[in-house]
Amino acid sequence: MIEARRLSKRYGKTLAVDDLSFDVRPGQVTGFLGPNGSGKSTTMRVIMGLDLPTGGQATINGRPYRGLPWPLHEVGALLEAKAIHPGRSARNHLLMLAQTHGIGRKRVDEVLELVGLAEVASRRAGKFSLGMSQRLGIAAALLGDPSVLLFDEPVNGLDPEGILWVRTLLRHLAGEGRTVFVSSHLMSEMALTADHVVVIGRGRLIADTPVSELVSRSSHHFVRVRTPDRERLEPALRSAGAELATEADGVVTVTGLTADAIGDLAAEHGVRLHELTPLQASLEEAFMDLTRDHIEFRGHGVAPASDPASDAEAQAVAQ
Amino acid sequence: MTAGTLPGVPGVPGVPAGHYGPLGQLRSEWTKLRTVRSTVWSLVATVLAVVGIGAIATAVTAAHWKNGGFVDRFDFDPTARSLAGVFLGQIVIGVIGVLVMSAEYGTGTIRATLSAIPNRPLVLACKAVVFAVVALVASEILTFGAFFLGQQLLKGSTPYATIGQPGVLRAVLGAGLVLTVLGLLALGLATIIRHTAGALAAYVGLLLVVPLILQAFPESVQHDLIKYMPLVIGEHMAAVLPGTHDFGGGPLLSPWTGFGFLCGYAAVALVVGGILMARRDA
Image 1: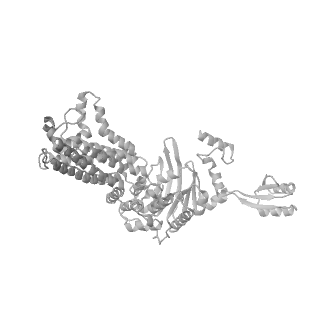
Image 2: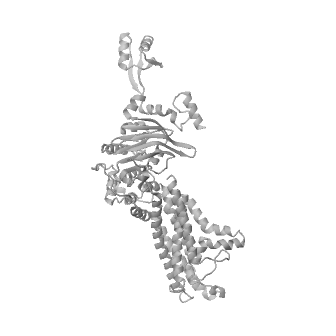
Image 3: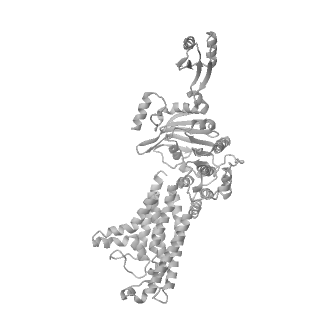
């Protein structure tokens, strides 16, 4: 169990984390979502006791990190994959961590086996690919068999097989009753892995909700309709409460009515339909909707259409 | 590379009784030190270089002794001559002391270290103890090796020293102690500065540049301050004859008083480093 209470962290003039409160519960995978630069890594470093919060506090199993009697037996973390001395072998990197807690060599070999690095364990970590470094970081996190696990962007740099492996591992760990907290900037990845998400933008909490709810709450359902009898169908749809957006070639995008209802309405009025396609905004779009006003760095000229107010705000931030 | 299958991971474990402590951290620091090739090789290279320079210095002296002037012979200190390489050793031990700490910050390993042991002063203390033991062993091998080889080369051509003569054991043992404490000073500076280049500059500056800056001051000030310089303290410790140093005149501290000051400098650097380490973000 991780509890963050009114957490804030300031670096000079930048407020990286702003009054953030949330719980990460055992037995499920909790995704930590936010655009790049939104404060995910900072929050994780504060939870791990590496950075001191400017305000508020974070606890693990009820205690601040620095108060844990055996940190590696309670928390395991993968924060940066490449944070390893390049001249040290994978086995020795794990060994020096294991020795702090009196963990034996047998467990070191066990986690190397678990992450698939047993064969390259004696090789210097500087020669590892990003994917191998990620696996070594995961091995380090699992070393003390902890009940709480934090992973910062664990699938970065992994091939599809590796991504699938991480997903399976995270679900497996949560299934054992552990607390699993995993950050990502990819909503679609989280939709496949997480049960619950904590979404932040510019260091502030945007949503703390089950994944299913987030998807249904913020996604747009709409229906694409193509008909040669637009002039008769449109008034009927409007009077049924739908909102219409007319496109070229007789295509109408309808929000507020299901495809079934539109089909029934068309039959009632004797309207011919050439196309009736229910569409759903993607998860990425749902995520963009949520975080649109909270993105710190956005490329200009390729920004998605949005209301002028938030564009002005983005401009102001950029200056 | 294939992903390992998940073995029967035990259920969510309980946390063992007790608390992490210095014993585990000392073992961990020893592992860190011996598992990086650069540290091991720089130590070996230091020993070879210092002993080698001592051998060259003594061999040259032995060869030219007959042609030398009276003054050269008058203040000839065979012990100091055989320890001529210690000066280079002071630079290299500083580099190793800096790297032991700055490599943790440079590579990011410090975050893994501090995740395992959040008590930062304890981490620094264990690191300093392990480094000090290794540095002391290497330094004493180096000074005794240089002394015995050097005297062997002088024997027959010039006066030479034996370890039993007054002040000789102090000079040889003391030179190794000075090297160790200088290494700790460097480790402390690296804890404060956290960057390899910056810490090296500070260490070399303290050792070599500060005495040069002193020469710009009036002679009375020079005479008052030069005896506190680490380089002068080290040079004085490694000599048997109470003699001269390369930075003008002025009275010197006794070897052990000077060594006490040197320990003080290292202690200040380590304590300041420890306080900063505990307060700063890793």
